Image 1 (cartoon, one colour):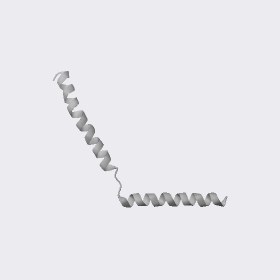
Image 2: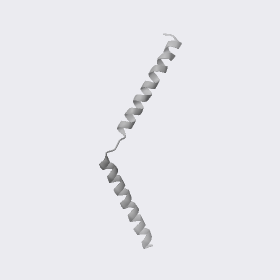
Image 3: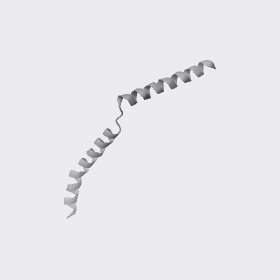
Image 4: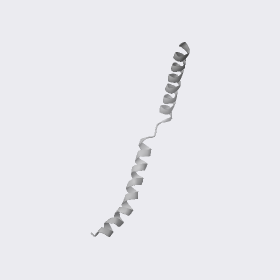
Amino acid sequence: MDLSSMQGLMVIVGPIVLAAALIWAIVRNRTSKRQRDETEDATRRNYDDHDAADRKR
């Protein structure tokens, strides 16, 4: 196998591997609506607690 055929193979296979890795990462990092809601609620509670502590000063 010479260098030009190896380069041609990499030009074809490279983007396919990159697309597969991107799709895998996107699917793997998804969160459910429940998880998102829990995170938002916890963030709001945290902000409210800090605001209340700041007002006491």
